[in-house]
Length: 143
Image 1 (tube, rainbow, N blue to C red):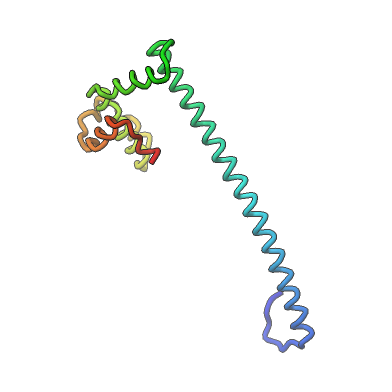
Image 2: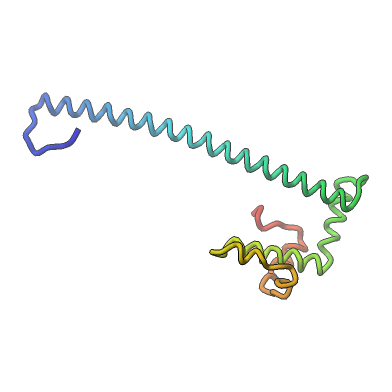
């Protein structure tokens, strides 16, 4: 109901007030419904991302098992992988891949940044702070 400059009678004002109250209640209900729908969608997104993560980790685990071989306990696999990260070449490779991935993520033209290879980025020493992180086994993305 648009406002106008004409004088309203008390009865018209009461009618308008009731209509505004009804409209506001409908909007509150609609807003509440939208909040519930948004929460449901956000939960579905989180579940899908978690499933994608689990599938990814299972694939990584399967690949590691294929390379290392079966028959080790989880603790033994952890020890072997931890040992990998004591090798300087492995650390340098992982740091260069992180740098390349960050460059791709921050680049306005990801196709060009994605063409970097390990050999091209292995000399970048800006990534040295990651070395301590890699050696300690911490992951910056889980923070």
